[in-house]
Image (tube, rainbow, N blue to C red; front, side, top):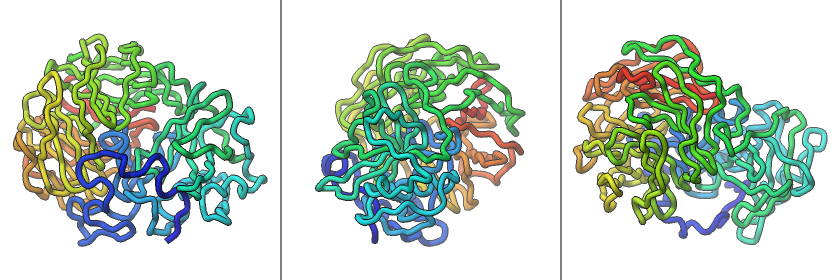
Length: 533
């Protein structure tokens, strides 16, 4: 076993991280580096193979933060570096690695760096980590023929694709490396592996000096000479995500039996530096776009045939350290913003034309090590919070003015090796849990007071290389599975007790460089596809 980047206490010891369930053990009984068996994994079995590229819901699979099972996709490559990044993948709940892959030990921080520079064609081969075997040695060892080296604070401002190399320290002698995703005047947004978190972090920027990541100090910045990326966007406006794209928003409307031709719904750059969400914030039955930035939140309302101009819905900084979600928590038909932090959960209610003041809806830690969702699990039309851990699932019900006490809704390990979703698949008005694995899809239906036994809803491998989504595309009140691949989109319709055979709903490429979403944007009660670039 080789450890190629930081281990131990990089951002504080693991014991200081509070979460429900088992927290830091090996999740689901699977050992990192060993493929689950039998060949069709049961829920909770984690595959050691890298997951297919897919776009998670904003903030990751249910939200940012929390140790994720080994091999879980954290940040899709299509969402950064102008759509040409590489997937950022979880190393699980340990800083060590047991699997040696094409670009090194999976999924260490150095492996991400080596994979990026090779797949982008910026460098061929490995940059040495001798003599320590750690990330800190990338900076002195990177060949000057292929990389420019910039000491921290030297006047150089990093651009997307640059590598920020960190020194080691006594508890972590190996150092660390993170990759720049976007830059603005005061911060640098990075992606990273082997950090037991969301796969992203934000570092302060003062002039040309990048701040520490926890106890790690910056050694220097490596810029591949072949990297022609420009700097990122500003976090001060609605296009603050820092992905240099044209900003086009495309929609494919559902007819109930297929997706139509792509339609251009907006040419305005619009995505958030913290989260980009799709939900109906004004209660007209049409899903809108929401961009959550560092200091403000913007909305583009759907007219049913396009997205309107950006509107400033809040000038209050509002996002969660664990998850930022959008759902109707008070049952008035308008989706609200939810910020899940380490020790509390906050809400900004929508009044139909803006988000109100920040309200404290729970003063206790509540988020899942696998996923955190917002959805109506008891059928009262108010979205509740769901925390999926390695060995159990917990719920906090919404009263309309706050989230109640934590309830254990299932003691069965239940999450997918491809993705875990929450949606109403049987049409009873209560959100269920869906686990998508390599060869099958499982469901735990909600009874309104708990999640039932595991049901096998499909033995067909079904997941997308770009996105795997869950939404009602044919308007029968039951959520269906959607697989967005590189060149086509497929659907498995729900019968209420299982998923049918895969159907081709579009024969053309359709996915966004920032994100791919499913939501009813024209108000006909059939979910459409939205590609945000």
